[in-house]
Image (cartoon, rainbow, N blue to C red; front, top):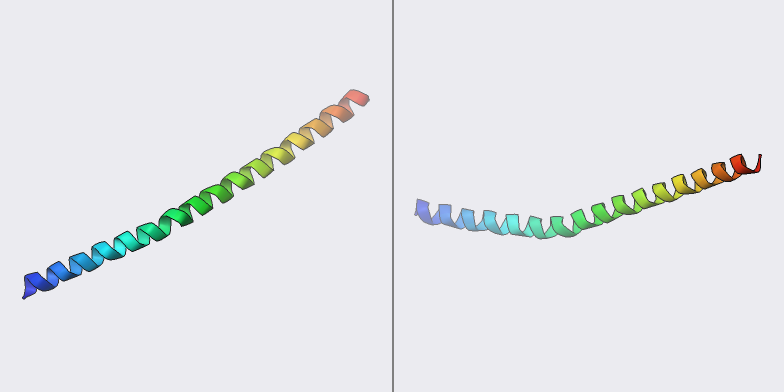
Length: 60
């Protein structure tokens, strides 16, 4: 009886872990892509600022 209950709970726990893992994968991908997008935006702004300052420095 106890072994059966224990086995049932371990199956449930395994199923729960698999479900949350399948939930985490797209969530992680979404977070990573968002961070990557933010990083590229930041780099674009930095690049534009660098270009602007180099152009203003060159015209003086």
